[in-house]
Length: 83
Image (cartoon, rainbow, N blue to C red; front, side, top):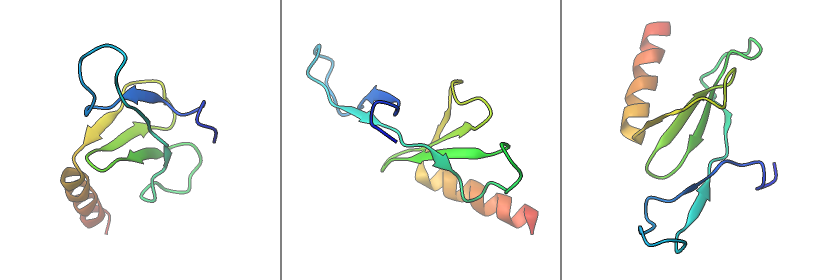
């Protein structure tokens, strides 16, 4: 995937003064917790402070951002319910 295809956004570490900012990109991938049944997948884009989550069927809609500890708690709970 080229960097042109990645969704870029202003880093929260950038200031509020005009163009002097840092932009970062999310690289989305299918979550390893998604099944193998076609397009019904969760995609994730991890960063050091946030796990970004979106529905693969509608990637242009807003996504959910969780702290890594919240993502871990969710995955642990989901795995316990499935097994």
